Length: 283
Image (cartoon, rainbow, N blue to C red):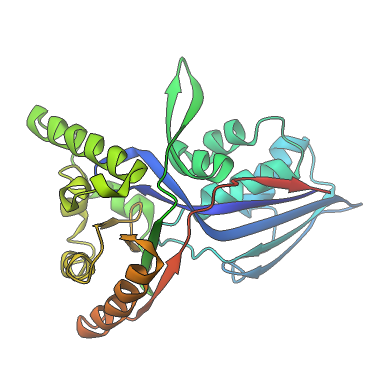
């Protein structure tokens, strides 16, 4: 069985641990029966050990109940860059192994419901645990929107980024984020309603800036170049610019490349369309 799942950008500013958007970078996993376990990997993550401890092998073994299979992985999703690489891999591996509900499997293994939801459903989603079960819902997404992603060469482990956050937040900050998330959802459905303040956040971005001190300047440069909203992608280190169409996105991408050079952060800027298919499974 072969399965393909898209990358995702989570949080989107105020939607911490709730919102995610699927993007057109992919991981593909193929699993076939075999006398003994084997795993091969191409592209992003190909330098990881190809043994039974590999994340895809663990997911597939849990689904199948054994390890008598051969796994082939090909990925274009950078690791540890806030683009949902592990969630996409968990979704694709679970589906290729024949899971009845790849979302539930991936949510249990990976822990980031919103990333797994985007990789399964595609588009703009939210996710939550309801009575112990993962639930996802889709939101409208303006088809004219385009997305610029700054991908630094610098890795930022999710666990490290999580440790930078406070255990508790004030009511004022919680209300602030909820109000901005409302603005964001309205603007993502209709770009004419999107204001730059819809990406504002008080729960995670400023707290994580000490791990990536150049991020505020890079975000500011994206907005000045024409991005309607700029924000961290997941836990970083990638940064996201939400743009009004491909032409604007091209200008923002160019400005993003210059900004990376100016602040001495090696990396690249790319334009990505949203993925609207989500998980694709075939023989």
